[in-house]
Image 1: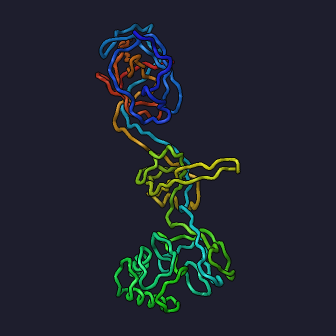
Image 2 (image 1 turned 90 degrees about the vertical axis):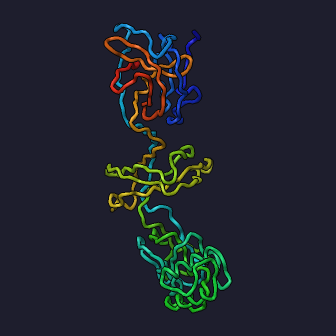
Image 3 (image 1 turned 60 degrees about the vertical axis):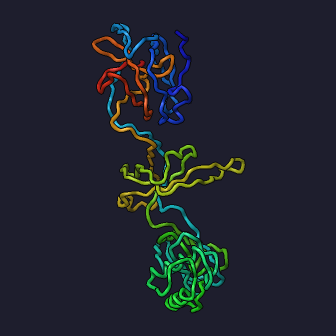
Length: 380
């Protein structure tokens, strides 16, 4: 019989506190008796577990009541979740700045909190509207006959949605497109040039909510000047997480959001991005973090909360209807693997188990003859 290990990790390779969902090495073997082994468990804690002498088979010899473990627990059947809790901020998502691309005088601004939809003015310069249109590509050039690109397609799709026709929605700005633009310009009180000059439209993914005003009515406008900021119109939760938690924050993942009143609502990760967070002082290095946007399923629950701190629970993996015990109930085998000390009729015996998911201080276990409700030994 070889010497007992002074310290054992749950998978024989790495501290499972760093990744509680990793599967541990499986194995059947002989149990070692009479020794105490320190085992690292989920969360980085250390738990002393019994180690028995080498025993053949799935069950070891019994021992009397005087030698029974100092504490016991029962084998439970439950759903085990590998989760991480993170702080989130309920709001309207990322803030975007609208900058003037034209010279003139700002003659009209919306109110903070106003919602602007497709084809409506975002602000006015020299009493001419700068109009919102939906699209993923920012406006960056004049659009005229012969121009091709995604921005052209965005423009034509918006014109079509606004009721203008006579052209094909594609990535080519044709004579037919220019005629539709002239009609649109006439309806908006603009010069009928057939050219959409840079700064006449602002493309955003959807309708927007004015977050704040960065300029004042009557103030001179110049290219590059901040006019206002805007967000989306739907309530979302913004969460920043450590880069190593990427396995948790995946697009489409379901989460639980706990609101300030304690109510829990379902959420879904809609977007994940890597962001650089500046250091708190000049001497502190910038930090790379994950930023996840979470939509709320029951938006009525967040009514009246424009901004609020919330808790978000991410689930990386889940095991339904499995047998579990506290991690501390595991008995470490000298040759690798784990067992449980089963208490029956005032005596105990050892059985070999395979371990699965580790989460929340418990571990999924599977072994011959192991059933729900069995009593197993625990350290004091």
